[in-house]
Length: 353
Image 1 (spheres, rainbow, N blue to C red):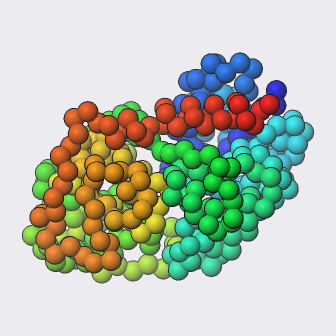
Image 2: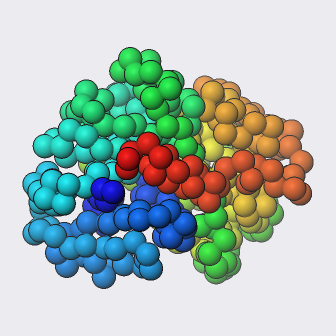
Image 3: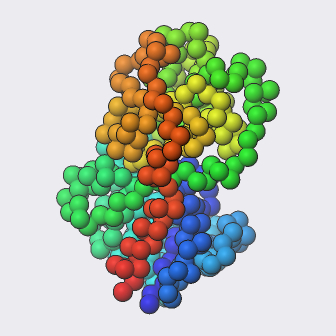
């Protein structure tokens, strides 16, 4: 049986949606891999990086090649390792090295192709080259929602039956402690009296809607946490009203406390492959206000409130929020445990033999 060789580069940076998905799938696989006879999974990283990510008991982390330049490492050293070991390449971040022509790649979304004005020219060109390589070669494709699968079929002419549809989960939030010191540091944020939003400040996250809604709801407080990468998204300027608290990057513990005590979590995204934050909020006991888009309906159904993200809300307190489901069926529908097993079953039954 061939071994699965995971591109570990995705684990070496910060933790946003793609990185979160990579970590959580691998952590779940580490728990259940012994149930799969003779299945071997290796995570390959450059020399010197093993200690940074080696939390696994049953998945081996291998160091190979000079990682001074991670792009060169991925395109050369990683390829050499995969071919030398006759392994099956697995990538979690939309791409595969150009010198490989087969394996399996998790494509999260096509936002960089669909929403060109949201990204810098360099980011668009890089993504276009990478995604076309994956789609034209013999890679098996997985994605995180039926919406993303349909987009892949529409743009690249793929057959729906050839795409593995997975999803995202929420269990990682259980392992995070609360940090209520965020309320002491920001006296304007009072438990139970603010709306909260957490994400990167990328244009597709549509924080402009929150700014415009805040202007129409001067008595309400809106709290936003998240960072911004100018080199990816270009220049983005927001006119910040006085009732908006911009926290910048915050810890997972601070985010958990803010989710737990907010009036509602706001996620006015314009385009997503899945959209993890409202699921995290739900796991913390908060209901969400999300964009009225196809993918949000697919993932969240009747467990959230929907708004027209092209028009700000002039009375956000009057939005009819759904009653929180004590049975937490939303969390049962979408979990890392569920999707990681589906993915591993697929690999074991369709790829390795």
